[in-house]
Length: 509
Image 1 (tube, rainbow, N blue to C red):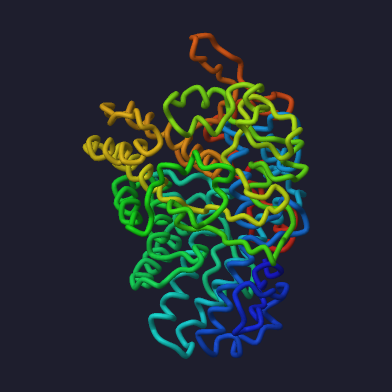
Image 2: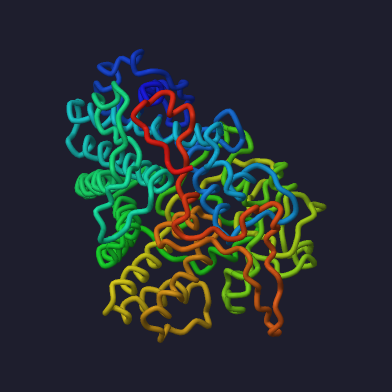
């Protein structure tokens, strides 16, 4: 563990220069003079900025892109997004092989990435209280660092741990819990899933309190109290604490964010900038820092990258035909190949061959420039979490119906408030969650938290009543069904981690 826990971003981005300055490569904390970094608020802010940049810095491979790598992997491991013509990078996520390969460089990267961020924020948290400056500024930096640590442990425990089982003691093993600089000095054993969730919740509770004083945000990469509340809602939803999750999701919906009537109809670009009023937490890439074709939009959108041209992504036809004809979100997808190849859809190049059910959700303004922003959290998700939490809690159907209506009426002008109750209402909410958050990194995590299977071979029911076979390619997918609770839902620890940490107990192979 020592090899990767002791990573710390060199924060000298030329302190006192603009936030788009180049930052140095990461190196061992043994060579970092923390007494110089944490002398004042300006330097401490530089430390935090360096950590944010690590979240979307491109690694040695195009699909090593920090936080966005986990989003792409999650959706490709579900059933709602698939390769439409041929396969490219991330095929091994789609066919559920890469996370079960102990020699995989990708798995080593994913694990190392999370602990690299955690090492950085641990250093900030350990030093920020002694930095010269206003208490409100120290609180703002510490609160953001706590949100980052919580978010990355939340990913780790959901990827490598057995799912949290509400009402149980959850003593199943997760990942090592490194919360202090002292913890990082020696390899640590795995904490239980319960212990990790407690640490995540403790971080978020503290962050919510520290971030209560609003700060002006010129860049939404900086999590504020709304983002902390939204993250808390995600965590509680995974724990099956339904009423509490609904409460925090509602708290996250401040006047800073507004639902858009045009978010799914804007052309020739959409879902590419954090200026969108619905985006709560997001990257902000700068053209001067071009980092190659390595963004979520490159893999799911229409950038002029090889992976976009050769491996266009499409929607599961079963899900597509569940979308109302009056729903604006349906217009993001082409029902036929003729429509996909028409002027109504924007492809990586005018001649790029794309199939039926091709998507235009991630449309970029410049096909040759992937320097576009990525959404980590949107306000629409808050409505969906509130509705789901209330519906599953029981006794709150009317409130759940209203929360769902408030969102969907902005997507479908013909939508009427649901009269469903009980499981039927839950099913309706979850359908809209799949449609709304398609391609944003939720599906694997949703299926796992709800202990539901992946089913990729359902027939689609067409408007004329006929049926159509699933558009998943069995030879590419390898698995068309993955049962709930199967051992494959847990990522394996890489050989590299096992070599460096003798305390790790491998997940069931």
